[in-house]
Image (cartoon, rainbow, N blue to C red):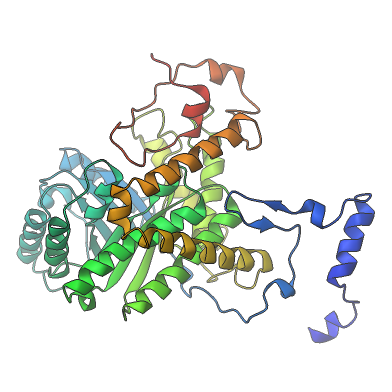
Length: 449
């Protein structure tokens, strides 16, 4: 290989810059630099000189769990059927979002919990659900088995609305959860809400760290931090491909550094979910292309599990066809693109490595600013992150309204017949401090059938 490279003359950075000016008739390298919404200057090309220090791979796992999210809305038999169909269709993990009470024997009929990863997101009393789950596993003789199972408890996510949870209630939930015998003892952070609300990646990362740090503070105060085995972060990814890869890599670096300050060795499980920002109700099949880009960014950024939402989620109820396509995208990533063969494929890419570092540095500054306000809960009481994200979403929408950013089929390359269709959007709760932003809804407006 060295002999091959020696046959070619090397080209210096200055020679490349001179060639740019020559080919673009006077346009220089500096003329092509622009600043993105994170405040990062994006250059037309990067070299080894942009990474002065030695770098290591950010993660070492090449594979991920193909995950399907199922809402259990009072009919466990239907949810069970959907889960079994997903597993037979290639899914390797199931996330159940459940009401306060659920019939577990009916919900989990013929599902081998020891063979797959599962996540349970119960509403209502955490203790009631855990006791029920405990009884279910005991009846099957599985109580002592080491299941790849997460019971998701994220009381601080209630800071997303006008009701700030009491610290005593948060401490009680953490105590119940970190003492349970089921699956992983994990801190869970539903961070996708910040990206879906329109936050910049830098501020999204800062909010995620502050959210997580609030739990770490609670656990440290109660001397329970050593019980934590895993950190589960649920993060949204969109179509800014290289930026999203860098974002996930930066998040892994930041969480490692933050948990290290507490002396923790808890493993991070990074769950990527495709963003709701770009999911258009008009020309919905274009969402498949956007989901492909976002999903690939999640995988190449190092997610441990990935959920690709249905392409038609904005216009109709779940159906076999769209759910099948959502799973198949991930199967194509694995079986045809072989994305599970190499870990951290972006390692050493000058542009992505540079962006990873810059996102991490700026996000740490954003996190420190929130901490100076007394932490995440106190900052939410002062409406600080809510106001910041509201401003960022308005700035983002301005870029779409003036055509600087393009959502194909919505603000450019429109299909006249699609735009004529009457579209009804789900209402966003008025009390939500971080209301979800759907770009198509904001651009076309809501119409009633």
